[in-house]
Length: 329
Image 1: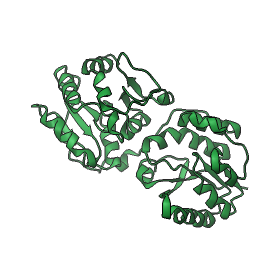
Image 2: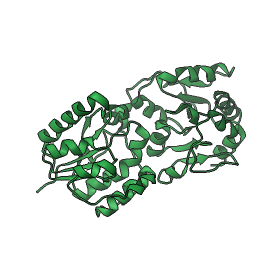
Image 3: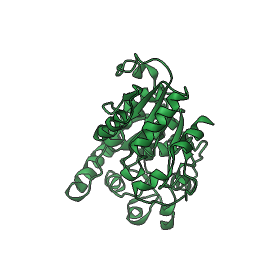
C-alpha cells in the first residue's frame, strides 16, 4: 500500500521552516513518497519550495489562538479527511494538527509528544520534555532517530527553477557589475546591525573594488531602513529591494556574489540556495546554525547561547571585523 504523507510545521518564520527541510526530505525518502506540507502562509512556502521534488502539495493553515483555535482545527480536520492521509507527522509541539488528525481517523499520527500533544498521538515514540531545550534542528534529529528514520543530509538545500525567476521584476537587470546582497532587517529589531555600519561597509567594499552595487534586502515594513542607508552615502551604489516579494528576493540573491546580513529569513534562504552567506551575530546564538552553510561573524567578546534583547549589542560587531571576514573568505 502506498503511503499518503502529510507533514505539519506551524512556525511562522521562513528561516525556521528552512531548517526543517532536511528532516522533511528524510521522511519523504523513508516512505518513498512525495509529501504534502502544511505551514503558515507567512512562510510563503508555496512560492519558495515549489520546485523541491519531494513536496507534491502545499496547504496553509493559520494556527491561531483564542476563539479561532477550533476553527483552524476544523479546517485541518476537513483537509485531512478529504485527502485520506495514512500518516500525519508533526515537527513541533502544537496539538491542533494532532487533534484534527485524530478526529479524521488518520491511522498514524506521529509527533514529538512534548507536553499536551502526546495524548492526541497514536504512535507512542516521544521526545522527553527536556528535549524542548534543544534547538529546532536537534529536536527533529532526535525525533526522527527514535522513529527509525534515516537522515542522510542535515544541511538545508533549496532549488528554484530559473525559468520562474527570469521574468520577475526586471528593474535591476540594467545594473551591470558585481553585486552583493545586504540583509538589513530582521524579524526581531534587536538582531539588526546599525544602518550606518551597513552604509560604511558598502562604501569600503566599493572602494576596494569588491562590488559595484549593493542590494538592500528587507521587508516592506522596514523600507525606512533602506532609505536611511541610502541617505547615509553619497555614492549611487544601493538598489532598494524593500518593495519586492520573497520570490523576487530569491532572484536578487541568485544574482549576488554573496549575502551579508542580519539573522533573518533571507539569510537562511540565501544559504539554502548555496550562495555564500555571512550572518552578523552579537546577541543571539550561533550554535543553532551548526546545520547550515552560514558563515557567522561575531565580535571578539561574543558569548554563544545567549539572547540579549538589546540592539546596542550589535554595535560591538565592527565594520572592520565584518569587512576582513568577508574579504578573507
